[in-house]
Amino acid sequence: MRRRSAFLLLLLRLTLGLALNDVEDEERLIGWKGETYGQNEDRWGLASDDASPNHWVETVSWSPRVFIYHGFLTDAEARHIKRTAAPMMKRSSVVGSNGSSVLDTIRTSYGTFVRRRHDPVIERVLRRVASWTKAPPENQEDLQAPPENQEDLQVLRYGIGQKYGAHMDSLIDDSPRMATVLLYLHDTEEGGETAFPDSGQWLDPALPDRLGPFSKCAQGKVAFRPKKGDALMFWSIKPDGTHDPLSLHTGATGCPVVRGVKWTATSWVHSMPYNYDDFFKTKPDDDKEGEPGACMDLNDQCVTWAESGECDRNPVYMNAHCVRACKRCEPCASTTDWECINRNREKLGFMVYDQDELDA
Image (cartoon, rainbow, N blue to C red; front, side):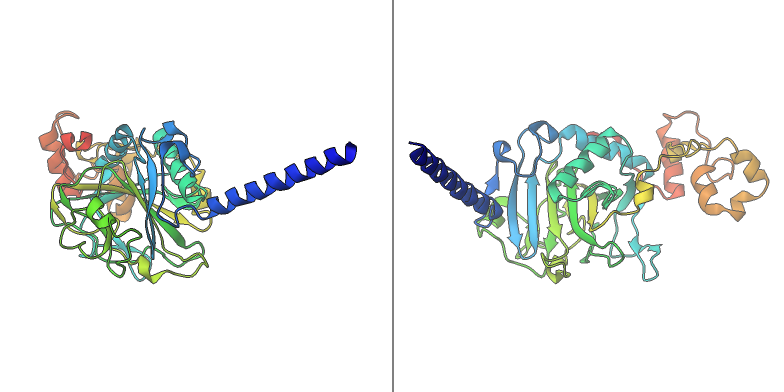
């Protein structure tokens, strides 16, 4: 009797083991046939309350590796990111040959960076990015896999005709960018697609018809049309760690906007923690934020510094924190005098924006 029981127990273990192996093999290959993930089978480890109520992931292409996360953001999160970023947005720059930021006609948007730990909403969104990319936040540039692996979140706004020309995202340094996650904050009427000019290999030939229609710039290419709340992830490196030349794409905002506007938040994910010490820093007490166009000094010592000549000796800091003391702007009657505020914003190089657009 004991021998029979032992035999049956061994047989049961073998059967369960084979079944589990089959399941594990299937899970390793999920997506190879173009499957999508529904709300009840989210393999990215996100709870239903971590994103829009109707969220799911689908594979767009394997060459390059491109994925869409439908419903990644809630409407409230998209609005919050726009409202957080808008006051500080200026004409976007690119990384020059010497590593400095320079203006270039390849990039004609307005943008700014939001710190990875700016507030609980930004942190929550970046943690979600980290869950999707399976990388830590300190490796991100403020909105990327594991929050510490991400860079600060870059928020961009493109108007009609504005674009980001074809470029690579995998900057080569001690901790290269391995993936890019684009969060779409606004519905764009026409144009503004993110397109991959060197690849036309859709995983499913039916995808262009379902995801389109596309503007002329994106036709015949693997591309994605901006939709508020969705996220696009593509990898700049291959599974073996080498650079993927097919990840050349028409930018974090992509093709020119034909009608409407386009808002995105970009999270670059690094292979290792990015600016790790900075990730855990808190803002100093004197590093206040405010509406630049309101012509307010952000440090109690601004007048003293201006009188001692710091406006000329230290223009970078003073023009950012002591614009009133340095007489760089027109004092406004109140913080709601938007005609005056917008005159100052334009004079100081900041984007003049429509308040209603931030709520759209």
